[in-house]
Length: 120
Image (tube, rainbow, N blue to C red):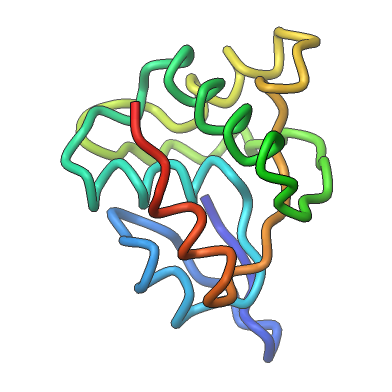
């Protein structure tokens, strides 16, 4: 998945922890954040139900998030841990459940602290 930093330069998120993501950008989408959380906690990120639990946790804790469309370019064939991010995003996009949505989240200290408190 590609994203822009504050200078408009395109970057790719691949196997990045939350701290690495934060060093690259101020805002990030919840799928990349979820993958970063999973990397730090050494859990598989490609389980849809676990992503839904993560989003539910963030919503219940009133984390300020902006819902965005899930959009992966057809040419984006990025894989993380042998799993397709595009396939994961497409599976989420097929659901109308708010916990399956993708959100933009500001990666500040308070938000990262809350995100790291998530557990399955």
